[in-house]
Structure formats: C-alpha cells, structure tokens
Image (tube, rainbow, N blue to C red; front, side, top):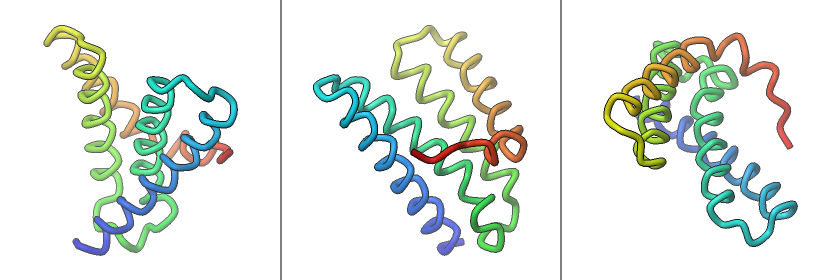
Length: 110
C-alpha cells in the first residue's frame, strides 16, 4: 500500500514538473495556465503510474478510475461550476480514468 502511494506521488510529481516546464518555456507569465497544466500533468501521472509500474498496484484499474474521478471533481470545483456540473465533471473524469489503459499509451512526454 505504501509503495503504491509512493509510486503514484512520484509519477504525479514527475509529470506535473514536465508539463510545468514546457508551459513555462512556451507561455512564461501565464501563471493560471501553469497551474492548470501542472494539475493536468499530475492527473496524467496518477493515471499512468499503474501502466509504468504494474507490480506496485493490486487493483490498477481502481486507482485509475478514482484518480479520474478526483481530477474531474477538482476541475469542476476549481472552475466554479454548479453542483450538478461538478458531479458531471466527476463522472466524465471517472470515464476517462476507466478508459486510461486505452489512451495512456499514446501520450507523448514532452
């Protein structure tokens, strides 16, 4: 359990940093964009962690689904949506997380 948490945090931090560096290089001064891109990178890192390190997770699909759900809810709350739209964003994030094994292998790391 602790090992899988370390793996998730490591990949979330690495992907967030990579996305942030690219955003800083090309869009210096757009700080809201930097935060949004970093959060997107952290989400991709959380979802990609079970793909890169499958032995660390007993239920990788569950980790990906919960990460997607949390990312969707966070995005909805951060943008100030109504409760119904926050829940819809959570369901959309859950769907993206569940479909992660299909799309995560197509991500090109900057």
